[in-house]
Picture 1 (spheres, rainbow, N blue to C red):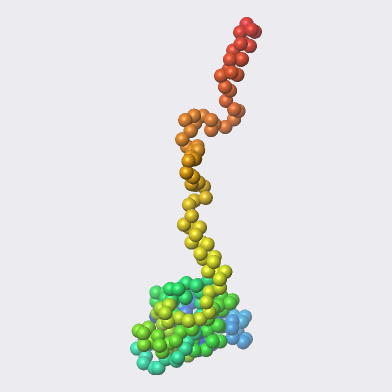
Picture 2 (picture 1 turned 45 degrees about the vertical axis):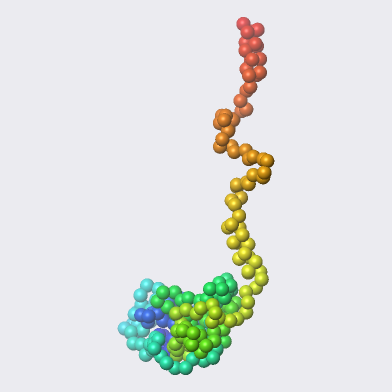
Length: 236
């Protein structure tokens, strides 16, 4: 199974290896758990394979793994015609930003797109239980200069500008929350009060008598001191 996924058809499982052919263990395990009869597999089981007779087939490195023999390639020069419509999933939190600013892949990786809604949802649920599917008119986007190329049953792109993305509008609740966050950042600090015309604000830092801030008993005034002196004189 590992050989088939990593060496032959990572695309069938919604996996996109990086430019060096590596796939993250966490992504590999999520893909395996979606297959009937493979939900029990853990990282420890993969380690057992790497200690057995087939260890020479694979190359583990930190939190990722690749097959030494690979029968696929990331070919950006592929001239195959693109489908009219592709789907790509985004997390709910990223939905408003994607609609406003577009999508951009991380360095060394690509955005994954699929002509099949079910596959797009499958990939999206690995990051969000309820992902949002965005629609990309691939053929039209390509005419506008957007790079999209096939990878098995999937399609890849380094970025998709906002004007090439359509789909459901972000919910009003999320838009309002975003606007409230912006408003809070623009408001003055809660501890600072703004003076109204004809008034002034007491600033404790400018008190001419700092001793009033000292803790303990309240300092006695001159009347109390005078009474104390008189009592001493009568006693003498």
